[in-house]
Length: 427
Image (cartoon, rainbow, N blue to C red; front, top):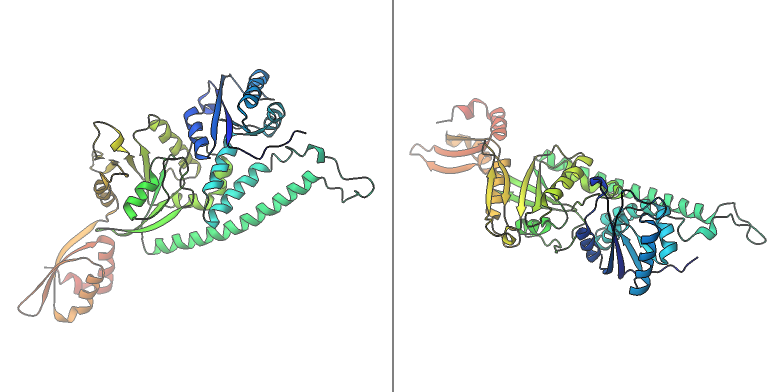
């Protein structure tokens, strides 16, 4: 059995071009993922295949080429831009004599680096354990037999079975903790629903600028950087929008093509914020030539997590990097905002985004002038409490005339409470 390497700073990358779109990956995205993980790529091996080799994924000839590059560059990890089966990983490791990591393992490693909150760390550990549980045989083949012999007679459980049992126990423990987190989030969502506070979730491809926009709107101090998966832990912030009131902004983890299913399952509590949102701000990098492909991938993930029916507003970010493009609102034939073009980094177009959010979220408003006698002090104070009084004019007879703009739902509540006293006061 070869010595397993613990490092991961120097890597040989392997990319395969497949004819089928469903199996195709982006080499530039792999390089960005590798850089985000803090790994330096020493060489890239590219090849084309109709289908993966069952044993070595890239075939024996290319595997020998990778092994030679590992020797010549001193790399201590080989990273594939694809998902490998446990047996393929094990077979390639034997050939190249160093650690082999597939795309899923690389993304999990980045998530492990980025997790900051207790919930985020639990979610990442759950995804890692589910991924590792199918790969326990790697490096443990000498322990597949049961313990036996003088002084070694045990309960008849192999080392692999012991490891699997321990992992199952840890997964059960984490699921229990995450269930508590989910209940707490659900309580928060119910409280916001009772208070009728709209929730707006930021979604989009990783590195589209979601956190930069989130910070620009809320003055939050969320970590934002030009790298993939800079944001992992969800952040909620309250924001006041004129004529709408308080709303909640939720910054969420970025999506990526072929997002590992273990991650989708592990981040169930976090993604619930997206499913239950009143509006999704789909942030896109309009400077990225893969913009349309990235949008399809995000929509695909939204369908997977049952959030495809939530209304969306497209935010075309990074207009400062594109020539002949200026901030603007694109509306449909009914005047409803569909797209907002802006730059979260410079702040250009932020006011346009606020205008679009107002148009989408502002409730139907009812405007009236009310003449209230002094005895209607309770009604007057309630109108002020709703912050719907635009102007107050005292009259000579002691009455006051109030110009009010009231959300339709609040007007109905006032009618139920005050009845004819309210309708008779309308000028």
